Picture 1 (cartoon, rainbow, N blue to C red):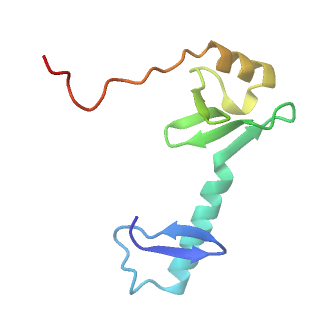
Picture 2: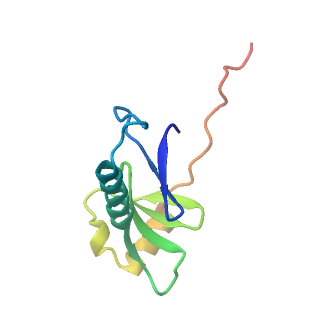
Length: 108
């Protein structure tokens, strides 16, 4: 949301304190480079055995992505050192998350 820079088909958001009408070329280049570095750090690991399983770095730390589902990595496990077998075990042993109740309380 808000003002952004488009470069090579990628979109880079401007920071709140930056005025889109007064941003310099150097500032824009720096923002684009920062975005590229962040995107490169997002992908930690993938497996040849099953390319759908990926270990990614997210907003709240590393997690496993399998298809459309995300799975927490247990504390004490290093994301970079996980093997394919350990990743499968984490996926199989993680309980299904149930949807919580709706936005409104039930009427009595």
